Length: 275
Image (tube, rainbow, N blue to C red; front, side):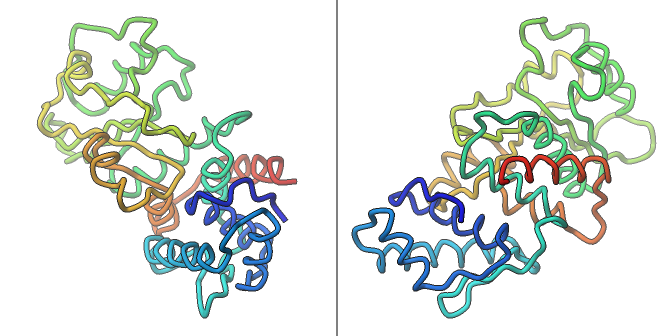
């Protein structure tokens, strides 16, 4: 049983329940959950249980037609083998424990986000800094050429690194002409995603002369954002937000292809974290 670290935050308790049910591949009943909450100092375990069930029922709907768990009659039951959905489990691990001691997990999360964005757009994507090890001006040259967009005169300053952008995606027309929908995504594996700086579209347009009005900011995060924070804190600040539920939907579409090497690395990382 994974340790429960908080009995006040409904989101964290719900993450903990998801982790135990999916990773342990065993259902969790009301009696078991309320007992665990009481053992960890919860004052009103019945009311807390009801709040957690409501949150998990909401998450089940957000995950879509093939959720990782179901809630029925107060019982939380696993619906997947995590070894076939390790990208989801990696996100859940980060959501519960944060990004401290990630040991390569953040770069895996960037690659997972890249797959989800490509699936969502049904287009093309590039991870900045991967695989050409940080030569950003050279990679921007390559991206501009691949997108048939005009390379601007400026390069990002060396201290700017990736300027807050981890993945670039676009929907090509296939006619080798500029002017297309472009998404600039930053990836936030930790719990403090809301402290991230917003992507500066005006700055990026100084590196590649893409049309400002069709360039969209985006963020991928490992949490499922509470409804009250979805608007102002998330979408209005960061644009097209991929939380864990949206990542799940597009990672596991029938048409989505996940590289075998990436999957093996994610399985190994999850196993190391949870064993």
